[in-house]
Image (tube, rainbow, N blue to C red):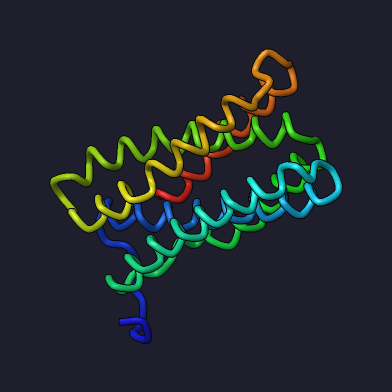
Length: 178
């Protein structure tokens, strides 16, 4: 079905996967930009950031495969999430390790809530979509927990970043589901 014309998502389950795919593209680009800046700003984090980027690339492929197998077009926000993710990664990468940890924590915090809601919903209505979502859950939780242990949560900058990035991530998900 890879070469057949793609159709819009027709069910809530398909929309969820379409939004997840776009979100993973944003995450890939957050880590890509942070790793780029880390070369100069905090080289000790580059390996971890490339590792996380690799996980997000695998997740993006899981969702791309689902969309392709079902003949579904990707989300209209796919490229916007990539650009936005790269911009966020550059800015927070330049700010240094505390901002990098706060970014990962904030994004993954929203993502975990989103995935948990999806898994509950998809369990009975779409086993294939449920599997795609549950296949990435542990990686996302590991990223969240690792960032939480590195984050300077008592610092004002971290608190502000978490608030702004959580809100932005929630808005991107809300927009994508429309």
